[in-house]
Length: 259
Image (cartoon, rainbow, N blue to C red; front, side, top):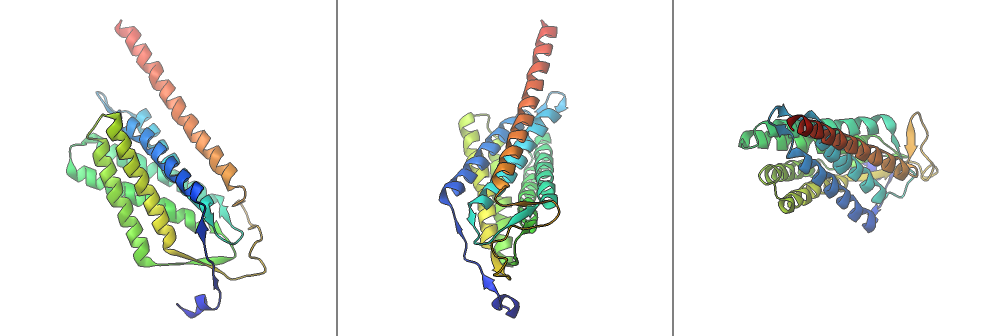
């Protein structure tokens, strides 16, 4: 341990089991919706952008982003903490963009092993980027010391499990096997998240400010994080619902014209 860390206190952290389980459930739910929509990304007229938006939003926004911040709620940090809205919102957009690109890339030729592996790498790196950007946005009276080997392990887990989930999702139309793929993808997201958290030592540098609410421009307190996360998740779910309604309307129009 270096002298800078030794001069301060490394905080002992723990997790609320119920919220950890909930975070996995959110990851699986988002993954299942995304993988269901992914089955319809490529249609007779090429890429269906509506299904792509639905899949990317479900997986990146709910399965990854909402899972991450639910996992952060599960963390007993032992310090007052908050999150910068700038990094938090950028991480949301990055997660949706990365998952959408990965799904679009593999959907063009789902039988191509090269595309599948490339999409798995992109998706895994997108999950990791979202996680560590979200962590960079944390505000508390101290700093984080990272274990580089464990960080690398977390990225490897994300890429490997994401590739496996994509392989499963594009090779079956069975809802049961799709649920298995969603469980794998949920495990990928959660394994990456909690392995990444294991790579972090939180160091407190101010005992006097240890439990103070973080201040600053566009900083949301951890106490307000549950409300913020729920609002975003509901908004994303509504977006997916609107997307599906638009598709149903278009299908009805095509059916009427065909009749």
